Length: 132
Image 1: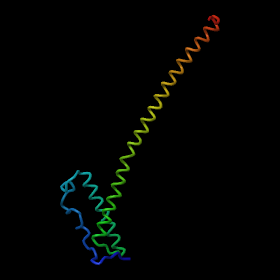
Image 2: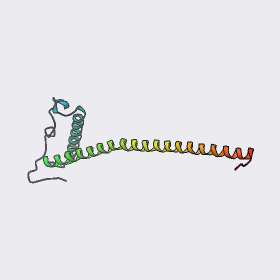
Image 3: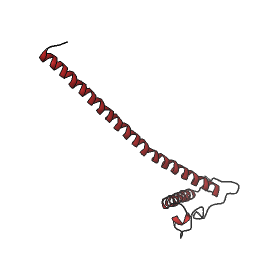
Image 4: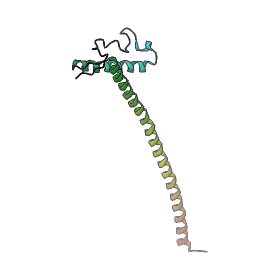
């Protein structure tokens, strides 16, 4: 199976495409250290994927390699966004639960006070008779 275009040539140099030279550090490329490390890790993953495809006999040109790289980056960015949404949802559930417990406690105190007041009236009525 071969993916070809009119200007397709076999790729022999996987290291040259969008990756920094081996002697440059990730932070020298700009951005934060974590983002740069993630970018280098992503590029390594894409390069391994492309190398595996070439071992299987698939010819990959620069355009296809770029598309694969872009899609891997998009999927990882989407997964990161999903992970940042979860703590917000969990915090909301925690606050809703705390509000429900607080409301239940307030209602319990009100009903208890009502019960004590009514019990006193009933007890006084029984002991001293009903005086109107």
